[in-house]
Image 1 (tube, rainbow, N blue to C red):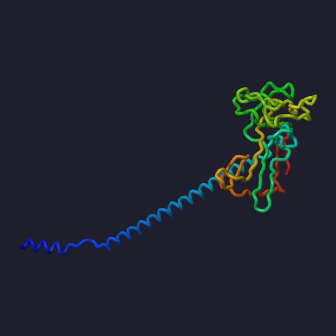
Image 2 (cartoon, rainbow, N blue to C red):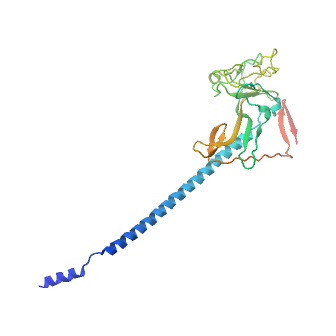
Image 3 (cartoon, helix red, strand yellow):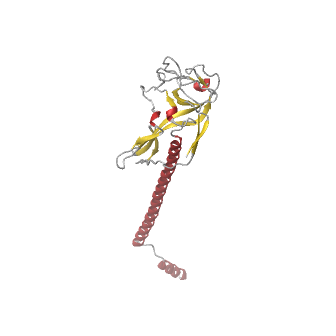
Length: 277
């Protein structure tokens, strides 16, 4: 009898969860889950924004570094000093001709805030020494060390501080042979053709201006064009010589300045040290 009364008391004190309580718990759980999802989504979006900003800043730094290097090398003609002392032997009648006489820096200024175009010309890379035999004519093959990394079609300039010539390699094996041939013809474009070059009599169109010896150095000659175009993914991008360089660049403005009061400058010309201030 006593046991039955105890069981009745225990069952009387026990009760289940009501439907309202279950619904309230579910609503609270859903609100908590929504808050967690909102925080996760916000954190993910913030991470994406920071990642995009970091990528943009890195691209900007890389672009400025490369452009600065190219600008510093513009109008570099070794110790000759000025493009007026350099003979351009490239064939002006063929595609790919570069008019180095236009100067080291040029371009086009667009109206308003439309993107500008920047064009840089000059020598680049470490110089290669010229090896014997030299000549005997200015039309002769130029000998340089083998395994030099040069290819057929490369445009070079050679200088000995008193003269300089620009020409294009026409032979197919300059790297392995160490020989730089600068013939006329259509094996490369623009090719070499300069009947006014005084290096050879009889208007030999593939001559250089002189026979260069061991005091001459060979550099690569290049023209670099920076401009804005449509990138591969659709938005605008900065292009370097027709190749997409940095994506996401909408504008490119170039401000030109001239130093009207430069410090004293010295250079070697005709094997003499000249200074001007």
